[in-house]
Image 1 (tube, rainbow, N blue to C red):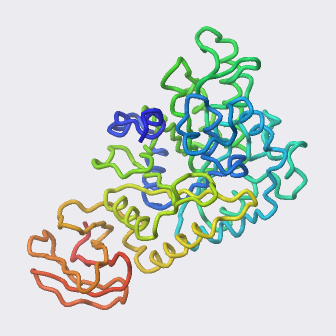
Image 2 (image 1 turned 90 degrees about the horizontal axis):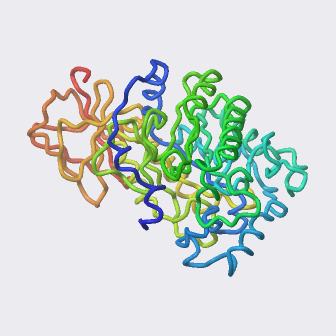
Image 3 (image 1 turned 45 degrees about the vertical axis):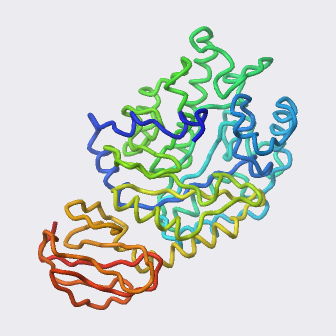
Length: 440
């Protein structure tokens, strides 16, 4: 991880925070959240048209985004051409019901969609900005699915998949954040909010208006996923979160708010990015892992293997976390074939082994090298990467009374003694169900 990205990918202090003063509704919602286990996040916007790493190339100081290949030779031309992408971005093959069907088949229990990235381009019909997919100067505005967010939320709700809204607190297109006539160097506001409190107050109201609009008009939503972690932590950039959160929870009392990498009472669960924490966070948590190298669509991107993705799923769940997998849709509105292939394989695996994944909690009273354990009710589920041949599980020191042992792939009852279970299965990760005599 580059030093410049450290504040957007990691907050070790936040990862070890505990809860205080949660309402009963939020406590219940966090239990619900921890049952879902696997989600999908779509990063989609103008950056897919450019084929670059989200909108990061707009930030002059974030040169890591331009090191491999800058989209334009100089920052002024890059910004000018990028802002104009709304005139050509036209995802005419966008079929939200197909996205929802494929997500359902893959076993995803919840979905988060990028309503607005740092570039300020709104992928929904906001009333507070003309820089949006439904604006008259957008190529897509005459399409019957122009309000992309609405159609996507509706499609996922019809498939009984929970929904969440990604929203960047920063807005590089807003004159209240990057003021007209100024040349911002980095990702931060182009002015000091403490010295120009009048402009910052306008920006804060703009953010509040949009968040209320999203939760009110595109609900019911389960998660508000706030990105841009430097806001509310540095450079005097602080939003009135008490006021904003109270207004949002009037609309939806059980809304989970995830002010990423900020910590405190509005980071209801923590989101380690591109990694699995060695020490599980004290709060509920969710590892964020893109299927490819990048979150958004980049031509000829490098995709992870299915085995690598599945290994992450099993490891995260055995540690007590959720995992959200990132897919970057193409500019025409379709999902990359490589992503679809991984999703299809994941769905096939979960059809067999999902019982040991969903609604489970980590089982930590028994460990064995290379095995991963989960539990629910009177069942322990043991997973092991398939290395070919028979896999053995040594039960000599297992602390509970086992009633039955089941091969999760074949549903066969396995013979066992206190020494070991041996099984042969075909999946990339095999699974054994230990049925206990009593509930845990």
